[in-house]
Length: 286
Length: 310
Picture 1 (tube, one colour):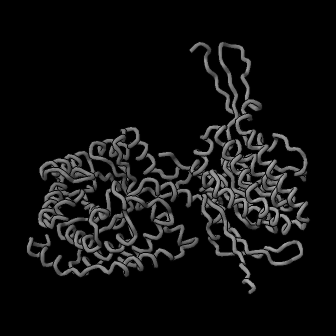
Picture 2: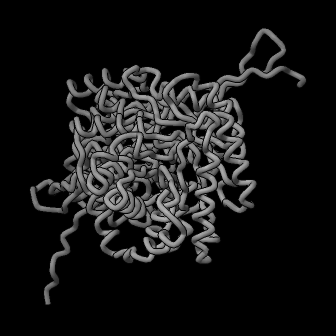
Picture 3: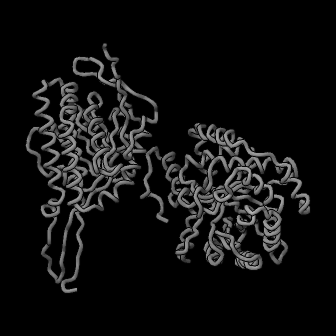
């Protein structure tokens, strides 16, 4: 007996829950050959607003965790991705038209990337912080602190490795993220949000919006409660420039890289892009 | 004013029971109205002007009350067109501080009284509490009813207390501080009780009926407020006396506030759509209203960095 198709309609991931889009809109996601894969929620500006509220709410708790604890939690996420290796491989095959073997390698690389960033959680301060030498009897210490709520446009083409490579460096230092996924290839991000929901990452630390960055980007860039903007996934140069200008309203940090190579060995640049340096002076001997 | 204990018994006895399912369905239906653009702008400004900006904590200091008063006078310092709130609401010992900080501005000082929030004190103490607040300059008194007596069926005691406190609101010059009667609906258990308590308070001469102290969960809910709005509407139809309504506690977002305004307009009518007859008892609501107002002005979503931390 043949089974009926289970035609999936995915939802957004906001504040640890999976709501439908406030607008009620969905769109069809196809594989590289144009065959129907699933329906994805089409996030509206109000979903973006709700996601920012959730991210802001989660920020204090996430930034307040010990770096060691954040590293542990992120490592646990890598374990969970590993557990869903086959599902991620299938997502990558469908989205990017790779063979199964090639896709499995991409998933391996994504897991390795996640683990690599997880390891940085309790090492960033040693590298980016400093005990400064000053001309007086003071301890003068600079230490990195998270910037806050970061709006991330995930890469349009590389749906898993690219996503992991932009998301992990944002949250590892204690930022919270609102991610706008690839419009054409959102399913790996949906699977990743299912992983995050069942791992120990607190709700709201990562919020995933499937939808059009041209529609959501301007609202996030102008939002006064967003502290930084990662424009990696914005391929339209005019749009990116507009978003940069909007982001200047409240002096957001903006990362606008030029065509990154996700297979290359990463640097700490993506992490330091979303850090603030706090320097304190303390008298010696008190 | 409206008669003896016997009259009260007759009026309350004639009240019908509340259709719980119908009431909640009606409230839920009213909450789905979509209010956009110009109407939203009007609603936000109206809601700001209806706020009783409240701080009722054991940790309240004169400094905190002064900063609250400053916020009441200029809710959005960056925008002079933003209306002032209706009143600040404080404990009796801070009334004088609040009045001094507000100066001659047309912003009232509401004071809770009568052994707020439990109401568990002897009547002379409640009266002294009220007179003290009025003497310190309170323009409005938020009293709590004796829920214990009400639930025990001693309606006459509740009635007489309200009458006595109302008398204590009189000033020497013959004017009178407005009396708001807090029913604490979260403790009244049933909608029937809320309806009875509303009528009881109105018969005893309340100028306002108020849902809750904010110290008990659930505080204000939309169905309870709808029920009280029906009560004030029917009361005016019966006795020709208009009474105000004040939901308090748990209203934190602009969306919620607009739902209440829709309910007021649809239930009691447009006569109640002014700060004279409808108030919000709230503290964090004001910040959300201001952020939504900024959003409408600038087209950008505002953030909590652009409003005060209270």
